[in-house]
Amino acid sequence: MADWMTDDGEIVDAPAHVQAAAVRDRRISAVELLDEHLRRIAAVNPVINAVVTLDTERAREAAEDADRALAAGSLLGALHGLPVAIKDTEDTEGLRTTYGSPILANNVPTRDALVVERVRAAGGIVIGKTNVPELATGSHTVNAVFGATANPYGLSRSAGGSSGGAAAALVTGMAALATGSDMGGSLRNPAAFCNVVGLRPSTGRVPTWPSANVWQTMLMNGPMGRTVDDVALLLSVLAGEDERVPLSLPGDGSDFARLPDGGLEGLRVGWSRTLDGLDIATDVSAVLEADGRTGLAECGFAIIDVEPPIGDYDDVFRVLRGSDFAQSFGAMVDESPDLVGQLVTENVTYGRSLSTEDIARAHVRRTELYDIFRSVFEHIDVLAAPTTAVAAFDAAQPWVDDIDGVPQEDYLQWMRTAWRITPTGFTALSVPCGFTPEGLPVGLQLIAPPRAELLLLRVARAFEQRRPAWRRRPSLMGSTV
Image (cartoon, rainbow, N blue to C red; front, side):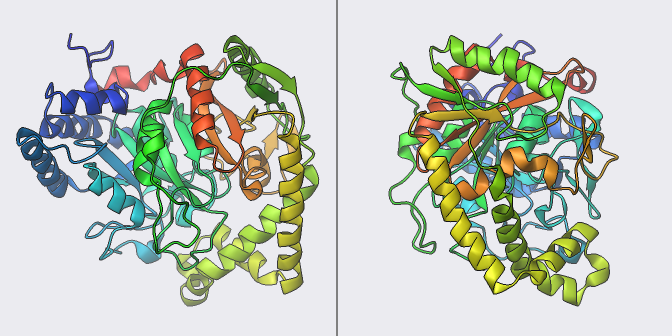
């Protein structure tokens, strides 16, 4: 068995950084690696419905270019020859980008989004687009254009969202890496549901362009991968300053390319069971206590019980998100009301109901929230908490309306474990933690101060080494591959 293979002998199931090394060392060509991923897509995607648009011809051309460059002694970049899936909310020049909306079902952009530019410039092979809920609304990937994405660990379960297609594609070996985005948990929730890693970066770490609002601080693009090192690899490419985005952080992402070992002795990890009183399903809490807390302690970290007093500030996220929806999608609702789904319409209606005073007050309270959260971190270095309040739910449900008998008032309430972090500006990721008795993945959320992604990734990798839950593949794979 070649040293890049997994126990099952499939390179597409190996971590992206292992695949990248195999291409660089000429143990496999970029074209061969692409073909392996295309074979996996043909075998698995009809069941999962994660990759909604393929770019086979151009992907093959790019792979051939990568092989020619390597033969001439040139490496195109950190992603040389790696197949990368792009979320269907990111513009791809010449390739259909629908945002999961019937209005944009035939939309073909004439330019690449910034994250796509950077993937291509680093030698990544854009293999296709991954499914999303309509206009990335909510954490359940289903839309009227392509239908639902199934969770590979339970085909009747949700893959999460809005980066649900990306997460499902990763864990089934249909892509080596994937791009995602996160406002209320759209990277973290599907990562937890599908047993992969998803990172929400700090404001400006991964610039968003094009954008109608380049001052955006709620919606962040970010990397997804099967392992922490994979996410660090993609972050090293996506991060960096761009003059088109005034809030982009200076420098590039080279610091993330190779995570240093050691040096975490004495690290203080806050342990939050409920993020200040949230309803958390019993089976999720049990996994987090048995594998999450124990695994962190085994890393040698000092575990400190803490519940950050942030529960009175949920209005901040709701108001700022509602205002953003009204600005971003109001024209669609006005012009094509019959083609816009109920959740989008409701969000736009709510956003339009807000007064200037409501929005101004939310900004003031956001500052208060940041100060409160910052004070918590005077006593800890990293906060650990549930990524999601439940494991993957029944895909026939539009959203989680009950957590262990506690009603959830709307489709946002059950997602508070993720979106309570969003307005703080802190960076957060979900790392695979363990499994419920039903075999459904549970994610551990790790949170660090703004611009502390390097620390966050190092802590996550230390945990991953103690609890390599990512190695447990879906049982689906045995019957389809």
